[in-house]
Length: 282
Image (cartoon, rainbow, N blue to C red; front, side, top):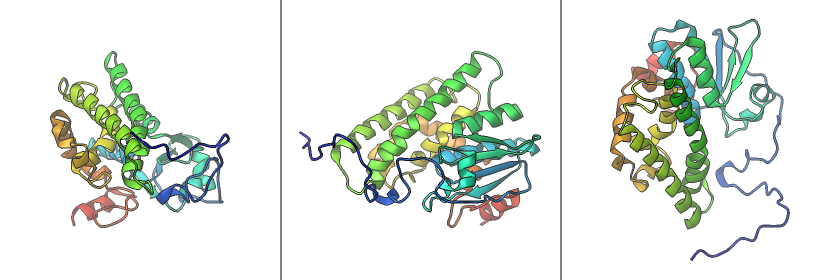
């Protein structure tokens, strides 16, 4: 039996100090907190992001396009430090009113066009360059269904399991068990699907795989939320492991997942292929 240790008030009020590691950046209102001018590079695609699971989706997509010879996918990637509140700067909010990374400014047309939310950016780039998205039915519908599935499951994995398992100021049995159960159910959905097909949408590598790898990749590599891969017994999902190993070997995945991250082996900002080449060369 779980003990009831918290009685919700009739009307919720914001406790600014409650929230653990992210208490200083989480807030119940939207909009900019400060004036900010974002940098602009020389390429048509300007990405403002961070190498979180959602951020990796877009840099993997861009690097996959470049690996396929799509020169129009050249991009500048600028790091948005969400720990410092960069996502609440005026210029960033003008691109994404939801103050979440990643955010893309496509300057290839007459006027710059904003695209926000990771799934929307993947769809935009796939349509723009005619790659990684089936053009005929039912393949297109299958791809979009798995893309939307990933978008819907990410909050359960990240804001749910990841938060309560790794970031919450205190560990409580109920939320960890609740979200661990749901995360394992999500892993099982993917594993059973991948027992039937090579990739999530079928025999073709698509934006659905790119989106899913952004989140599943960390668990499969063992670098998501500390020892979470062991806790969730991720290696037991054999079909998911097979899929993950295949994606991990792709040049675009290897290059894209290290962009907009701090530390050795990562690329804080990317403005040309040479930036990534230098890191991969050691």
